[in-house]
Length: 494
Image 1 (cartoon, helix red, strand yellow):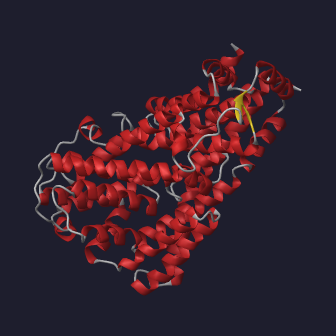
Image 2 (cartoon, rainbow, N blue to C red):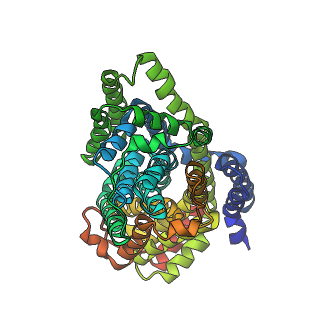
Image 3 (spheres, one colour):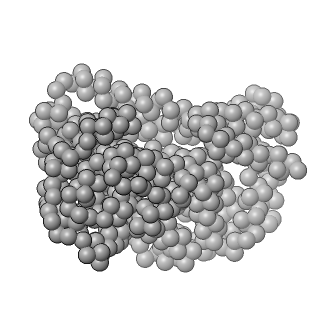
């Protein structure tokens, strides 16, 4: 009974999120509940509980600064023409009914890396590609699924994505190392997905009529522009840049950020390199007219947007986790997974399953990350013995689980808020078709490949054939014995 009581703050958090409360309200309320239970069950005073919460928040301080810099970079990339240059480069290649879905997947995957937002990417690209699809006679469901899957790509691996940063912060790993860990796997997922869309376009017998982006944008009805501005004003800015044109060299800031990240430079260096490059090249392109406006209207806006929600939310989630540690609240879950897991690889597989089922239950990827993330971190810390580096690798995979099963997993859950948003935007910008969740889900090849390849590779150990993606193997890591677990418990209560 006490064990259930200790775990109950998680249920409170989940219930509040399901009820429609924002994480910025749900997390503080769940933290208060956790503090009251911890004071009673552990016989600790409020000062002790508060110190445990604050200590845990200190561990994610660097992630909070990264979030602010990431939001600033996203704002500059969206406004200076970096995103528009990516779209125009693809559109000017010539798109047909056979290739519109394939191209949409590629463009949205790159744009989502540049902007760090899947929702913003979909809102910006849906008007272009759905009307372009109309012009060239493509398959509307195939194209919609392609841009939905591509938009999620950057949210899983993007250096400036809030889900990437939050999931990494909860697991206590650096974002750049996380990206290098999953980089090749993510690239293969995208490649396989793009090939699948290309093959589908060929097999459906779609026409070979060529269309262009400007023509598609000009066909967007006036009422659609109005509705889109209400949903995502930044998407309207991006569409105008695509129509008016920006120099191709505005893609260089994104290239610099990606190269720096994969070379292993610290996350802050990568982010501020992008901010500086967007400023310098934006000056030449005419998209940056004033240094003061650039700093006040873009960089400061990014800082403010991060501070108004995600940074504060992360602090409360970290405080919540610190209090749950005091109670050793996740012990029942840890014991159960420990019993059904015969080795570390199986334990990691169950961590992935917990993440996907958490996403199904909560119907929100961020809710899953902040609710299930601390649980799977605890499962590794409480059950696995290994070197510091090997345990860090397991945490990198945990962060990838949280993010991939949250973002890509959302694309396979009909009742998920992601799908609801995508259908809402698609219906708004292209009212000629009635969109249904299942119709889009069945064509989202990128999401299917991402989720099922992650589960398969983790369970079988075939991840060792993917560079930098292999999990440490036995005996480098092993499950703790019953005696070691008892010793850990004794140390906690000492």
